[in-house]
Image 1 (cartoon, rainbow, N blue to C red):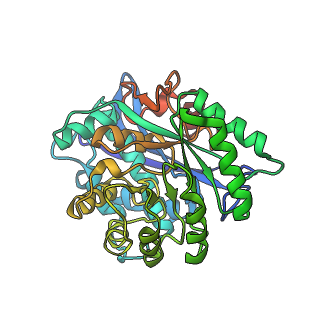
Image 2: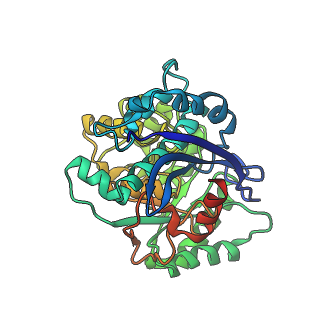
Image 3: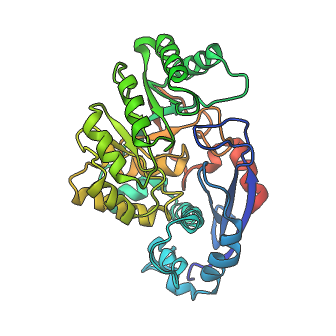
Length: 388
């Protein structure tokens, strides 16, 4: 029996919150939740793969329903199957999704394709009855390591949020086992942000390191002004100071700021990643790259991005993806990335880990659940079961 995709279902769900970073607020934020329904059964139940897009980009229901869904459903089943015919081939599915698409224009369509790609990989691993991270490691010929570094992202601007509330938030992450925490900057004055940083550093002490994220807000003059202030602190990294496509700004900042920097979450193709490494002045001995597969055409394209990094002399350990979702956790464990972002309290139920997973000294150990492991998270499983 050749594997078939019977249906692709999308629903746009709110992940709204009154929080804001330096650029946007999240009061109307949405995500697309997608189910890829197959004709395969495991343990008497039909195999359904699930996916969703990361926070910071809106749901892509229109593109998924009007453009990409039909391409998979209208394709000959054999054209989407692997050599055995028993499972889907993600690369073939990706090629079908991107048929009749011009190169370039890596905007919203990269999110739509990335969301469907996530659901396809979930289905593939479930059909194989393997955790995705083990399946990926086997395909790469490497040992899978279920232990993954994670850091806690938060520190957003919030109505009425004072320094005591910020300190309490960061302290709670440290108490939950995180050794790196991240906060937003650029949404207030430099003087106020300096006070916020000092308050957090006083709170966490030597128990954790602090990273800061400007979400692409600064021009070069402001980015350097902040860099002068930040250099006095032992930060884990200075993230996305300027527009993600302003490689000249990033390169100029790298010449001025000696400590680690991070960027990449708003670059959506391997071509964009290549340009960042060619022209952005990123330093492979200290900087970090944050490409997010859910926003950048999925794992099939993300794997091409990793090949670009290797060509430019970068270790995959310098990649710590944005998004805080389990798909990137699976990739980090399966391909040996440097870790993953985590949202302990935000963007639920899509962030976080399977029930019972605890952070110990900054690391989580992934359970051996088939697929991406979404069903191990009760609140997320409920959302997905209602979809398909």
